[in-house]
Image 1 (cartoon, rainbow, N blue to C red):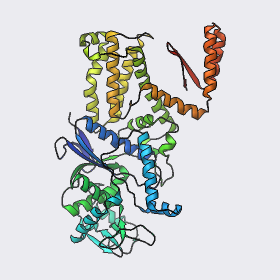
Image 2 (cartoon, one colour; image 1 turned 60 degrees about the horizontal axis):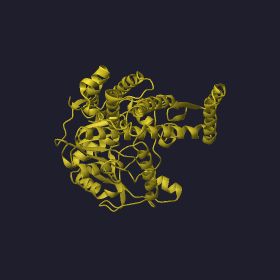
Image 3 (cartoon, one colour; image 1 turned 135 degrees about the vertical axis):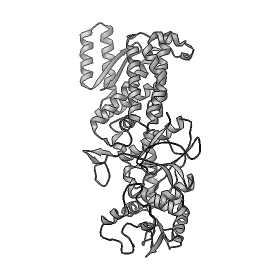
Length: 494
């Protein structure tokens, strides 16, 4: 099956055919760096991270650009409130953004341009528009005349007449049309400013992505992505100014992820119902947040709740537990690929066939407009089959074809999980991260726990099983779960 994507521009699924065979040029709108990122930002970052990973796994040479808006009214306001300059605010929150994205294992794009580093390119586009009579100066600002672009509204599906009928009372007396949008803002006293043919000022928000997209990917490129909230007016305006300036299609495929909802309302800072990524990672593992985000198709809304996050973490623990058991019960050195298929099928024909079929099934799911929900369902189905196979051996170690089949299954899980940014850690590290977080959450004294475990082990050695059971129950009351293994007693926090 060839890759098919839903194109917001055409309102339908289409076969994905890049401009240049084997090459994909991808642009995603980045954040405005005036505050910490919330889970809505996390969803967009994770969705396009997976799209980036998957395209590369299919062999495409991808150039991925994601910008930073580092000059904006909100940044200036924050700087004024703190008595500092816009650069200090922008740099602080760019650093914070990287900390959050690194915690979520979001890969760095190939290019991450700053708006302030691309102002000459923005001025060039505005000048082109002015020369064509599509942009006009009014006061100290420069505006785009939407009526000069007949296709305005083609991305959002809005007609210019309907938009005009629903337009609010004119606020800016300088604008010829209430729908016209600003390309260049004249500077106010005390604001950062750059020289331009229209006087000192700074770019409008929409012009940034047109300039950076065309500079780094070309005047026409393959994919532009972002959240659904950007369709109008941001992406609509990008199309208008880019295509009016250069006379060629701006982007071939527009991809938009759905909202994160809280109590059926879109999560956003303006509504005040948001949770920062940092808040969330205090109570859930980063991969669990990824799993939660990817459990719904990227275009659909996802309902955020504590229980949904907790369930995602429990599901993730099941995946890692199967990896852990396989590694613990199979030889450290194993050459599964050298075991004959007949011998592997003899161990568990159904599991073997699932492993063989998995790459095609996973690819079919992802080729269907990056259907991560379906891909995850396949991942968990293979995990359950693998765990059932392991359970048939009880606590015994696996050898020969049985060990090879178990390793083959978990390798398949890991290889495809990593395309989704999951199963990237060794199981020991994953469970240790979970344990440390829960210890901090519950205020558990590690020294006390280990002392009680030592007492219990001594009681067991002395065959004082009543005392051993009492100590186990005491630990259970503290939220500590024990597991007795040939390597000794391990403990986790429930």
